[in-house]
Image (cartoon, rainbow, N blue to C red; front, side):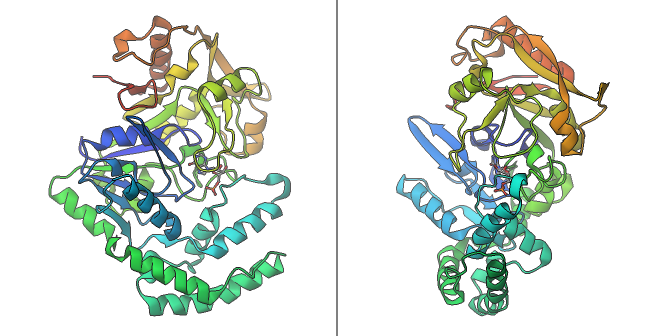
Length: 426
Ligand code: IMP
């Protein structure tokens, strides 16, 4: 199949970075289509660890086109730092392109986000404080700055003179510190970012069309996870972009008919960073064991991740919205030594089994997960190279996921390195 979307099927941090990096070998372009530097991907190649926030995980293959699509929000300062850090380690970034339509994260977005979180009181989302939400809000209210504005100094100047005084007043009205927001300083630094990035700022939709027309394969790299999506996630405890496969079309600027395969990535258990409902969360005990064994601390913010059992009711919903062709199961090795292993097969609310994933977070907060218990395994599976090598109970765990969801598990990750991966011929 030619073009593929990889999406997170939980609350992010499913290990998509490693999978995109692995699959990228067989694609010509790797495209991000939503989010910004709220994402964090850790790649382990030989003995080197790479932490990426904006640059697509395909960057480590020379010659692949890596694209930041129009659906993203980009902090140019962070992007330049990331490019510099990669180049210092010998990674060639000349094939990195940025959509001229992508929106730009500005200093006032970050200041505003902190104020907004404070205004939420007990309903704090626990955002990454990277300015993601306020930048998307400006996009929707049509006062955003786009990448193409950074390379048109006159336009940038004009827009800043319209927007910055308004933002300063707003910040001041809500008790925020606005001294650091200077129109001139923003103009200086952002026009310099524009100069540094100008060769890369192009119409990436047109570029993708060319790649596709010449027979090239495109890999669309989702960030966050479906349950952090603005429309279908656990609103309001979500990020500000859509994280479903159909967003790949909008956020990369390609026709839906150019998407041929959708792969959903799940971790063998569930994690979540920040606030919001999490029906299968385990506080203490096994939850703590999973956090330690799975090194569950955020790549972007370093926060400890909340941990819980695998929730197949979530996977069922992901399949409904995305039409999954395959599941990628990661961190299966982390479950070693846990007995029994529970999987959630649905929710009970006020004594009744719910028919589908609830839209109301208040309901999600008080559902009782319906669990099935499976036997665990003691073996270290991180050296298993094929499905046949896995212990029997481990195979049963994988098969239960397939049976319940109706989707084949095509790839199993049993360790962070590239070679700790089982590809199944299905
Ligand atoms: P924001 O994207 O910074 O607005 O944060 C909104 C919510 O999404 C918070 O709960 C974050 O912790 C969460 N979030 C955003 N990006 C990621 C990610 O890449 N992995 C996991 N959680 C994320």
